[in-house]
Length: 586
Ligand code: PEP
Ligand code: MG
Image (cartoon, rainbow, N blue to C red; front, side, top):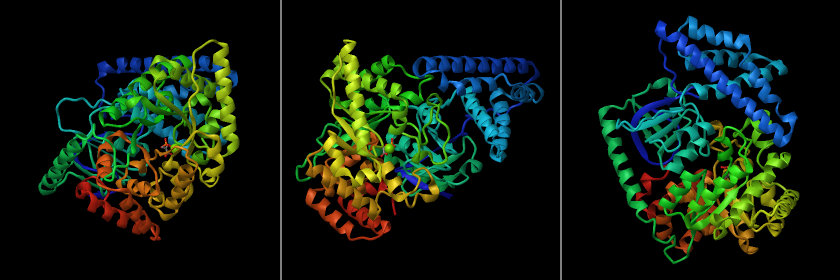
């Protein structure tokens, strides 16, 4: 049994499916003599395809931002022609008769060890190029994930860490649960799991070394328990819980057409966070009243090159058309931090979350930024968007100057489109409140925006100075800490006082305890993973505003996070007893 962090509630029992960080389940087989040459050819073909992809990227970059950003692609392409690198892989395939993905993995590990040891900055950079190109190349050699729906037992994905590109690869494949060795409550794995309503545990130390594909595994997302090869009694007890969990989820989903309204008749907006078109459909299926956060960076992360304005326009049209109740808040590119793409010339930084990320990166690349704004304004004027309620949201705003700069960019986009005689429509502009400095200046910032969306995932990590993805500090990265609650109260009251619409779109919006407290603070609009909407709607129907205010009042007298969690957890269980099965247990 292992103990990690329960990040997506519910219970699952299934078969282990291991995903290594980069190489997905390489076959540890010895190639028969007659397959060796074909395998080598397959590797060569993968190299050619990767090189062609890099050249195309470089050309596109040259057209869009100029020559000086393209060096990285040529450097990476050179790795594919480097005799030392190629020679090592060749030796693995031809001499040791290993399949190409495994050969590449072995060579990769060797280079990674060297990278960890070297102090030479130039060599480190070259080895980083190797790292990046190998990731790209591995995608050409092995299908990302092959979780066939062959009717076998449901799979539980077990990984060291789920990276953004894994999430894309996983897509809508059927999964019963997720377990990762690292990561905290707002890591990609956790967000993916909650989005799909799949029980998940992160930070389960060493779990990969304890299990192999096909083992039975239990995942209890409520308290972080993971059991590999449970004994028969454990297995049957957890299977019973799993059935109850699945039944309850099914029952709650039946409320999709009911209004989201508190017991005393106050309407709340329950919106969905989405990464793309599939999620927009899921949001509609779960009864979301709109999309409160469309994370557009997934379009860029999943694209082989840079999506052009026309491609973006096409995608936004589709997503706008699919958004429930034709209501959507679209967020501009939020790259950097843990989400990097090579074409923005993004170097690795010592402090990526505090560095060149999000809106800061967009300002540095006005061509991309402007293209994205243009695509949104155009999609808003399109028949798919013309009758929709579209809002444009800017991430990680820190200062008033940034808001003014954004407004100037939007005006410029409008002028350009008017001159080009392309239809466009201006839409309300909002700031994403994620930086403590902005929280303290909220009264002044809101005068210059049309709405606010609180990004509590980032706000909490910056307030508590605790990396949201680092499990070693996850006890600090806690939305229910008294400090966070006070800042949120201040922001919600300021926005309500100024009559500026405010939504909270971080993961805490979908947590029953946080939801109750936010409701007590006066928040009426929440954006969350589609899968948790039915549960939150049900909770809303069981509580009235006075109760929420009284729970908040009691909470604000508590001085530790643990006291807050216990108090609110108990009150939520009194309101909806079944929530034992769906929420974290302290
Ligand atoms: C947030 O920070 O709360 C948020 C919703 O944005 P993301 O998780 O994409 O950083
Ligand atoms: Mg954020």
